[in-house]
Image (cartoon, rainbow, N blue to C red; front, side, top):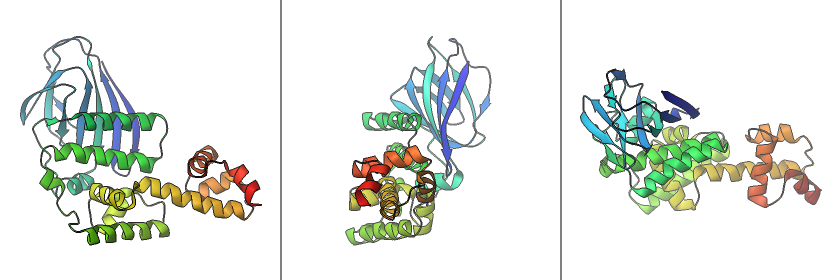
Length: 268
């Protein structure tokens, strides 16, 4: 029995929580892969056979998938297994893997930091984190895992000097000031860098993630409207890019320590 729960899908990124409860058996069915992506094993153990060979997969490794690749799974133990699948569209895959869509065929080791990151991604999806935040987290998890195979390929095109990194971060801030709704992949495409490198450079220069910077821009736009006496919080939430009024309240509390109604009263 296979149960797949889609955590989110946005901007060429899909994250799924997969629970497999097959009884111990040798796989007889050939299963085609659906696209590019990484599969992180959270629990259990199974054997995967594909054109790339045979791999024993447990919670210390991840593996890559490619469109149309045939695979077969053997399940040696009872209890099944649980996995996190992060799927990427071809353009995003290429941008993360040095311009090439041919992801590694060997299993990738997942050190504790990476193992924690993909679990935190699932937790963020379950608690309703913003799509922009989830996309940025997912891209960084995939890039960190791919770096275990070839850090030089993942680093291809990364700005080499401090001046270039600062210029890139400033360009990203300028673009977000004009349109805070731009996603990380859209920003990266505009600035001609990979999403992972843009995220990493932005954080190293500014001390915050792109999604956090976007939240600050939304909070400041909302503050300006509240100072002007805005009373329709549902309309304000939609205008500044929040999912709903509750999301706006969470953003304002996180940024200022107060809810919108209290802020409006204080600035009246």
